Image (cartoon, rainbow, N blue to C red; front, side, top):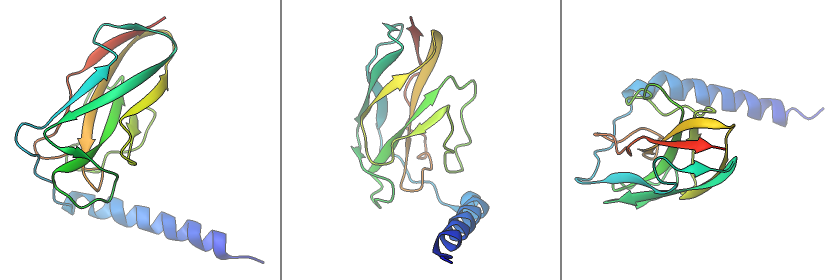
Length: 145
């Protein structure tokens, strides 16, 4: 019987639990002065198809994958239809409303149901922690036809 996979699963669970337990102890990365996240496309108020392209912009800092230890870089998180911002002192969770782009991606294809939706970008550091102060875009609204 191969017990490697169950051991790996248990190890991943333990690492996740430890990360959550010490999340409040992780120091937040200082944001570069003037850093700004923004949408290249779509524009605020755009009417889009069910599946559409979202392009991310970042000014005043570089884009890098998770784990890169450089305080002047980060990676995008796309906040979809969030009424309240997530906690800024903890790693951002991965949910249907918080999409992670930890490989340094700067665009995605997004599929949403018809209706009005809000989108916002939030930059995370090497630990998925928002910078201090947060590097966050304006919230935009799109209407899916």
